[in-house]
Amino acid sequence: MPDFNQRIIAPSLLAADWTRLGEECRRAMTAGGDWLHLDVMDGHFVKNISYGPAFVQHVRRSVPEAFLDVHLMIERPDQYLQDFIDAGVNNITIHLEPEYDTGETLKRIRDAGLSAGLAINPATPLNKAEPFLDQIDLLLIMTVVPGFGGQQFMEKETMPKVVEACQMRSLRGLSFHIEVDGGIDGNTSGIAARNGANVFVAGTSVFRAEDMATALDAMRQS
Image (cartoon, rainbow, N blue to C red):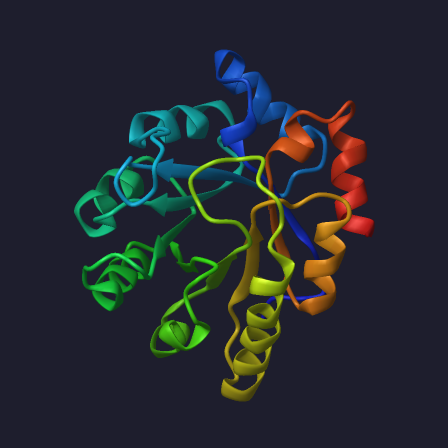
């Protein structure tokens, strides 16, 4: 079973300088990042468009040793799943809110030998995810409304769900990570950790910090 007291920091490439993508990936890993987080947005499920499988594949080629944590903020993840599997990722997280077969899609991710994640937006109650908790390796509780970086951490709306997820995990003897994404920095990572999160996605606060290694260390120690 994973050690949920050990913090995993996942710098988000959404905030990286894409003109130097390979260099930015290596910088994040050298500075102490544990995973690399990739936010895929389709302009339908969220009001922004980011990148697709070819971008993810380029990241894999740039840092073949990295754990790639892909977050599909798209309307039909089931239709594009194989493209991201083929791109060489390690974890694929899908959202609960769109209308598609969530359980079957999680099964396909695991059958491909990957880690499977399920994400919920700040407005989505945790009990909606409860039927799928035994099918996942990671639960992503969004701490901002997804779609754009640089938003403010929504503590009151989301931290009770982190606490509740920890309780459900313990009561049911499950072993999924609890990840938070949105407004995460040296201060809010400590708040989320105290409530039970152990994986922290951070974009703006690390890629645009004066020193990335210092910013990552602050998140790990807060």
